[in-house]
Every structure is written in structure tokens, then in C-alpha cells.
Image (tube, rainbow, N blue to C red; front, top):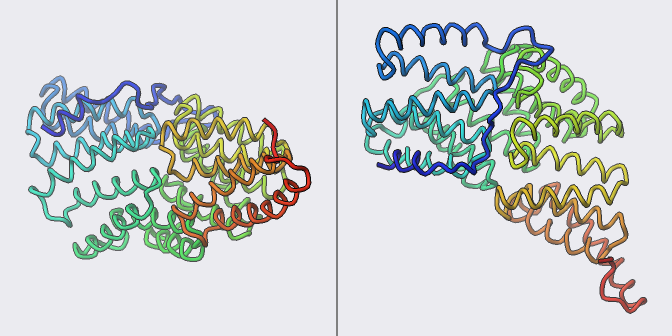
Length: 423
């Protein structure tokens, strides 16, 4: 009864997208619209001729949910997947691969909505079921593990995620999967993201280029996954200091995604966040802030304030305030992000430490040196725990709090005060 207990325990407090996305004004047709309309037509036919619980009806509804999910219409996709999961459980029983696959789709929606903890729980329930039904290298088992690893990656449990992705790749090779199989390429993509976060930019770039080659080498494809991979490449170029190359690539991809996916699609917004960060680093402050404010506004409307992409985008915006010397605004923004992130992700997450780092920078800019020292030390400790001492964020935090230690101690001794800040 693991799956039934899970669906019965779903809380109404979870962060869900309850606003199906309308097509963007620049999009003449919605992404995969022809496929969606065909599936809706076939679903109506199967429901009328076979009933709502017939396997053909459920299969068609599941495919429709996947299309809706790719369009970013998470509420509608969730409705499809919940219906299929419940009907499959009744029709086939819990110990059936079709039921497990239906609940995996539901877990994927939870993850997309930013509800990684319940998605992780459901994935682990599915793995406990699958262990008695299928071998480790079975495609469904690999899919469950990939989603579990992605949840852990977003939750900041990087070592667990890395281990799972590497195990999936090993199992995929054992199963003799082709090099272009998505069950191999997806964990490779997530490992590249992890390598980028860890500052291993050369390895991350090499991995993404290998994925593009395996997918056919067409770097100008308008395929959703290809555009996402190329956007990640643009991010890596920026991290390596290749700003002009990064800006050019990200502008191209952002325009393609807006045209193909729509202006409110999550992949479009992520690329625009990367682009805004690059523009800020190039000191194109007005354009970068305008773009980032727009991204945050759309995310808060479509995903909610607690969604992980909303929080990351607000972190980027906070850093822009710091770069412009607007330290009081940065302080307010960083405190808001920190409070939201702790409630959503827990205290031991990189977004929380980024917000603490931003607080430290904002205090330093306001000459509240003792408070800045405290925050930057906390940020450094967190970054070291998550990423290691060699990570760029950890090294920058250490450099800054080491410099502050020299500035704070003489000031305190000379002025006879205990704090360099104000209350």
C-alpha cells in the first residue's frame, strides 16, 4: 500500500503550479501543439469507445500528460498523471510496471513543481517496489534512479546525487545501451551540471559537447533538450570568463526558446537568468536588472515564491544589487531569499549559503564589518561542506572574511567597541 498511502498523504501546502501556461505572445503555435491536439482527439475516442479505465485510454492520457509537462503546463499534466496512477493501481495493482511508471510520472511533476522532498519519497517507494519486479539495469529502474538523483541534486545532497548518476551510467553500459540513449545522456547532463557547480568547468564542457555529439551533432536544433544543453554550455563559458561568447550563445538560445517554448517556459527563464548574470558581469547593469526582474516576476506568478528556480533567480538579482553598490536593497532581498529557502529547502542548502554570502557582502558594503565577518564565515563553512575548499564560492568567501578579520580586530581595539555593525 506504499503508493496509495503516498497519494493520500499529498499535502495541499505543496508548491504547485495552478496556472496552466498560455502560449506566449511571440509563439504562433504552442510547443508540440499538433501532438497535443491529436492525443486529445484520440483520448476522447478511446474514452467513448472503451471507457476511462481501459489500458489504451490510460496510455493515451499518460502521453498527453508528458506533452503538457514539456509545455510547462504542470497543473494540467499533474491532473493527467494522477488520474492514470489511480486508475492503473485499481486496474493492474500496485505490483505492476504500468502502475510504477504512472507514479514515476507523478514524481516527475512534483520535482518540476519544486516539491523535491515528496518526489524523493515517492521515488524511494517505487525503488522498493521495483527491486522485486525488475533487474537493476531495467529501463524503468534507471528512470526512477535518474529522477531520484535529480531530486537530491536540487536538494543540495550532491555526493548522493553524483553516486546515483554514476551508478546509472554503469548500469546503462551493462545493459548495452546505445551512446545516444537518453538513459545515458540525462545522467551525463546532470553530472556536467554538478561539475560546473564544483568549478570543474573543463570536464563539464567536455561532457556537454560529448552529449551534443551523441545526439547527432546539430547544435542549431530547436529540440528542447538540445537547447537546454547549449544553454548550460553558455553558463560554463561565463564561468570560464568567456563572456562575449557566452552572451552571444545565450541570446541566440533565449530567442529560440521564447519562439519555440514560449516566454514563460521554465527552460526559457533559466537561460534568461544565465544571460542576465553574464550581462551583469559585463557591467551592463540596466539591461541585466531589467531582464532579471522580468524573470523573477514570471516565476513568482507561474511557479510561486518558494520554487527553487524562483529562489535562484532572486539570488542572481540580489548579486546585481551588490554589484551596483545598492547594499541596503541587497540586504532586504537576501533576507527574504534566506527565509524562503530555509522553509523550502532546509538550512543546509547552497541557496541558503548564497543568501548568507549576499548578506555578508551587503553588510560589508554598509561598513557593518562585524556582521559581515560573521555571515561570510558562515557562508564559507557551508560552501566547504557542500562543495569543498577549492570551489569558487568557498574561496571567495574565505578571501573576504580573512580580509575582514584584519580590518575588524584593529577597529574594535581602537574604538573600544564589540561590533563593527549597527543594529
